[in-house]
Image (cartoon, rainbow, N blue to C red; front, side, top):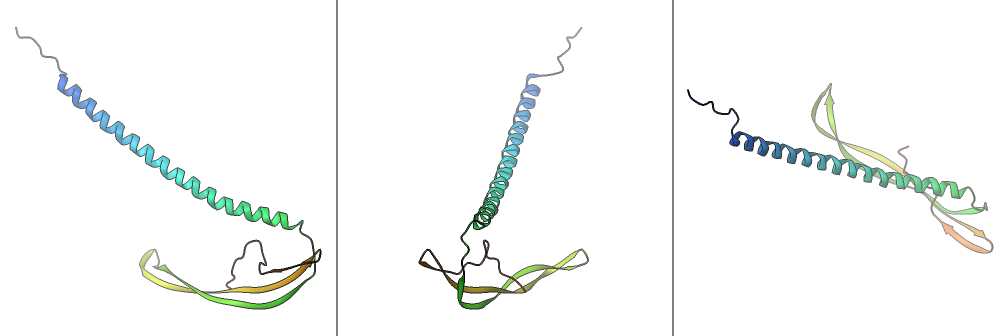
Amino acid sequence: MGQAKPTGTSTDSGSNQASSAVIDRQVFQLRVLVLVIVGLGFLGGLAIGRVGVRQTWEAWQSSNWARVTGIITAADTAFATQSHKVDKREGQTVRGQREVTTEVWSPRLTYSFEIDGRKYEGHRIAVADVPSDK
């Protein structure tokens, strides 16, 4: 009688290990990619949050500033247009792009005031200077 051969050979085992190693490497690379993306998002959030925290801190501190009478020495408005492209939408279908122009008006003031005999001049009218489209 003939002898039975083993069903699994050493070459099958080797190819399975190599295949498993490739999959493990791909999973590792995917995990690294996800960590990088999440990390960049976190850092971006910190940067944006830092600006908001700084402005909130300045606003809170300004409540303790000395209150004095000032004189507006110059007043004007600045006008600018800002253009950007947006998608043309017809229903749910995008049909190219169109350019949108927005008019932006910003107040420009110069004022002077005096505290303890020392004269100051300023231009800032808010913690966060934001232009208006009205």
